[in-house]
Image 1 (cartoon, rainbow, N blue to C red):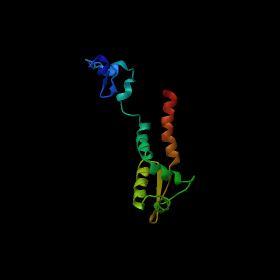
Image 2: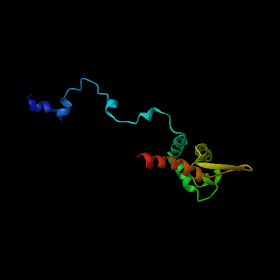
Image 3: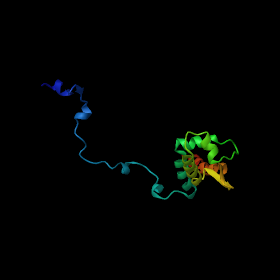
Image 4: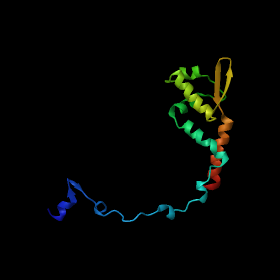
Length: 137
């Protein structure tokens, strides 16, 4: 087998990079990156709630539930389940997550719990992130 045949092993061409030996030493990239020293510090208080909001809004079903609300509208579990492909218990589960994250407000009236988008709280929480971006990025 000649040198040309070595390049075509098993019908595949090997690149020069594939034939080179791996690096003999580890390069610590952390030493070569300029990063803010405050990275390891805890999140600022105004950012703590945003993690729950992003987690709650990261699910497509919960996003669809939010899109059901008109401005100022209050909906109960049954109303949401009626227009959803989800069961009533699944809708309840998603509403609980949205409520615990602060995305939805709620009020119990008799046996029903009404939900609404907690707009003021969302504006404040998301605004904290936008303020940070404007000031620091």
